Length: 290
Image 1 (tube, rainbow, N blue to C red):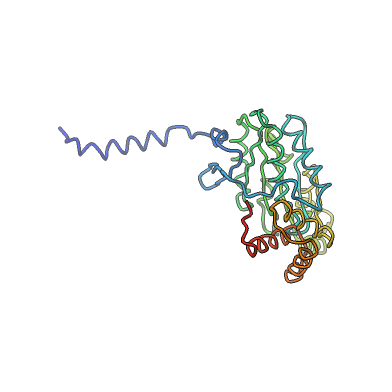
Image 2 (cartoon, helix red, strand yellow):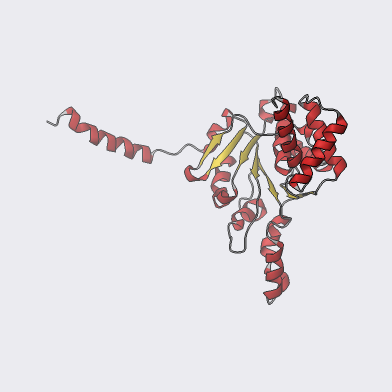
């Protein structure tokens, strides 16, 4: 008769075999644990984000029209009404990704006391786009409504992963789940470099067809929201808003002068530059940005 210690390896192999046979719990099972998640494609799981790195909606300056449109679209989606996928494209640092996160928080704050109305924000990284069908299959069975967020989305010439995105946006036989909407940001309006578009047009036998497949991807977003470089007045409004919100006591003329000098050293004016200036200013004043 075998000794008990001899049975341990056998029992371990049996346990491992049973674990492999057991069905894997879908990622959607854990959506009640948080309001934001990151999709980890390597293990087909969702990682909860307890504290989202975001800027308050009221602090976003110079993008009022874009903010109003995206907020209204998101409110409709949260209410179970028809809403569009959205592509936020344009100048760097002008608040595209910040707006998506701020709108998510704003709509959830408006739904206080209505658990069913709380939206889940699920971020998928650009390099994980090929795994998108697996993620959507998990989210399809979820009770909560989900904003799928892809930041800095773009494709190069030899990249074919955009086909996964096209299929789930509109063209697939299943289509996008009713409880999921996609918001993406990009510096490119058509999600591909302009020089690549021009090169394919100039070398193709049928120029208009050469890039149609890739360019048509952006057409599948119902909302196109353009973001453009801000002027000096808008930049000053940004830093004034931040300074007032965080209680940074600096006279307005001095605040403008320091902010302008900061933007010159950076060679740009944008929401990102304004925030970086405020962080530097708060540090010099010995104040925290809480």
